[in-house]
Image 1 (cartoon, rainbow, N blue to C red):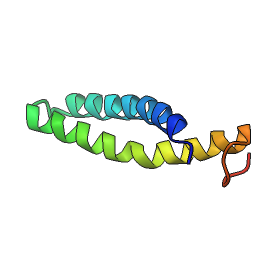
Image 2 (image 1 turned 90 degrees about the vertical axis):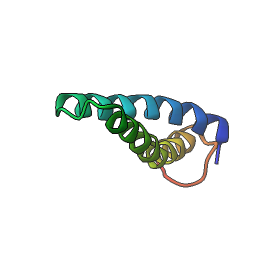
Image 3 (image 1 turned 120 degrees about the horizontal axis):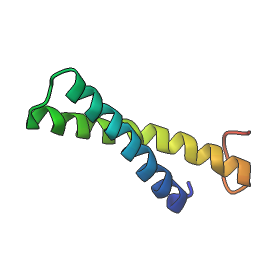
Length: 70
């Protein structure tokens, strides 16, 4: 796996997904610190498969990765 590409894609995906989960938690009334921390932890874990998927996708498009074909 292309680790530098994964780190960039993961950091973008983690930021977006954690932001979505935090906004969802705040809108639904779960606005205490433990709930926000849980939303952050779940967002970071959920971002890993998305980072791997998009890293393989971009790598197959650029020719630097085996796996998914565009």
